Structure formats: structure tokens, C-alpha cells
Image 1: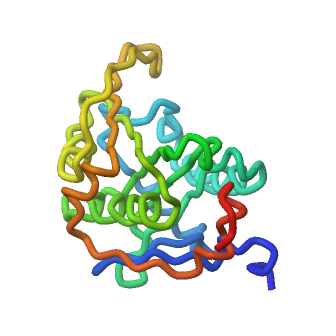
Image 2: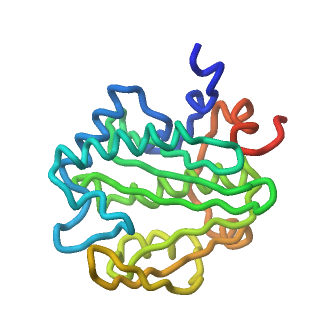
Amino acid sequence: MLADHFPLLGLRLRTPRLELRLPSPEELGALADLAAGGVHDADVMPFVVPWTDQPPAKVALSVVQHHWRHLGIWTPSDWSLNLTVFADGVVVGQQSIGAHDLAITREVHTGSWLGRRYQGQGIGAEMRAAVLHLAFVGLGAEEAVSAAFEHNVASQAVSRKLGYQPDGVQRRAVGGRLSIEHRLRLTRAMWEQHRTVPVGMEGLGPCLPLLGLDAP
């Protein structure tokens, strides 16, 4: 089986409402369709790389290529795991977690997006809570970092809810305009104080060498 060679295909994260895992080809197609339908207001750009600023067909294609690209260049010292998020079996968005030299840095970074019709329901906080549980409980991380532009109040609200603290700002050029990005950092201690979402993990053990960690 393919999962014997790439065990991350068997990794599952579950919360009361959600399941996070790598998608099948058909589910990846559904994720691409969801992105093509829109993930943010047209007058704002929440991403450093403005991949949504394209015709819908190209937005969909970029989702597929992004997914394959990160799997194709995967190394244990530099990886980005782009998990599809399911609510009641329906694709609702993507939650990413990645790291560089995790065994040394003990730091992960996260990013995400949701289809427009699934926003404002607390799903964003729940899916980030899932990968933070993976990071701190499953991977032994000590800190997690994220970032959001100052106009992305929803993302910043999720970060505050989960215990992140300000970690400086960065001036970015996005689409030929200045955008101020707010960096955020979550320590293990702050995560412990703010964790409220129960998370189950399945299939992590065989994945650890691919994530730069020793197998149990």
C-alpha cells in the first residue's frame, strides 16, 4: 500500500466536529473547487503570495499544484503538511503545519484557509487547535508561530483565543501595496493554559521519521 511508503497518508487528527488528513485525489479536487468559490472578500488579500488573485480555474489549479509540490519536495528537515479539513465528511478548508529542523528548533509554523460559507462558525479555531495538539503533544514542539496581516482580524482573533502573543511586525509588499504583517508566537506554557478542544490522533508513530524525529 502507498501508506506503507508514505505513512503520513494514515495520519488522522479528530476534534468534536472535524477530521484533518491528507486528501484522496477526488477530495483534493473538492478542495480545489472550494477555493475557486472564494475564501475571502475581493477587496482584501490575506496571503503573502496572492494565489487567490486569479480566475477561479487558476485558483483551483494552484491548490492542486501546491499540494503536490510540497509532498514532492518533502524532506525530514524541511516539510509542510497541508491537511484537508472535513466537517461531517464535507471538505471545508485546509490547515497546514510545517517545520525546519524540528528536532533542533522545536518550532512549528501554521497557516490555513476556509471556504467562505464555512467561516464565522468557530471552525478556524478548532482546526488550528488540532494541529497545535499534534505539535505540542505528538511532536514535542516548544513553540508555534503564525502571522496575519493587520486587516485579517478573524485570524488574529483565533490566535488570541488560543494563547498566542505578539512577536513583532513585518512590512510586506503584496500586490504592489504595503501590508503590515503581525507575527504571533505560542509557547507550550501558554498553549497549556488555553487548550480547550479535545483532539485525537491516529497513525502518528510511523510518520515521525518523515517529520525529522526518532520513531517511538
